Length: 238
Image 1 (cartoon, rainbow, N blue to C red):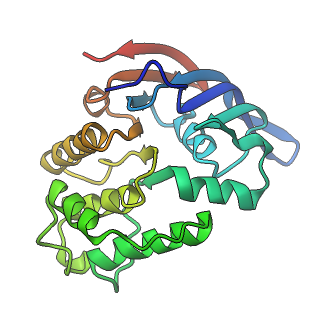
Image 2: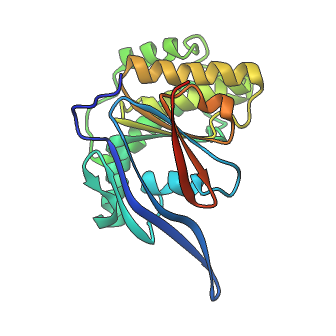
């Protein structure tokens, strides 16, 4: 349930991003402003080239805006040096990508645990991994019996659920998902979307999902529509 009393977890104000190819300026994002409440599930929808992936990278602190500001849980990413932005990502953000990016020689369990360790080094967190929470999370995502399998022994849907567990294991306040169903068939897409929604509801984590698929976008509380680098409209849940 989104919290309307607490400050928004995401505040984007006047975001613009211009890439340069020699002397040619290529605008990817133009004056985008919006906010996301805590606990909300928001879908960013648009065709290829609409600027949604650029927005994803700006919100995740993976690149810097040409103009404008991004506040994540009250922290202005624009004012931070690279090392501190990395620490903010480790403390506050979990990432789910279209490509699962699992380490092929490690089991599902090891892929999740190593993500926790890396995040801890980045953020300065010293608490050991809560194995009970790992088991709870794996059961929630339907991979409790698959943790000792390597990625090659898992289906595409199972690999994506391991990637979701990897993003959620640090209990981030915010989960950013970039086309999480892009490499999946319809049945597995439905499962992954359901799991993201369930994690949003059961762990009260804010989810912002990038997608070009209107059917996938409809699972959220709200849709933000983009085209040609501009935010066009906001649509409430259907």
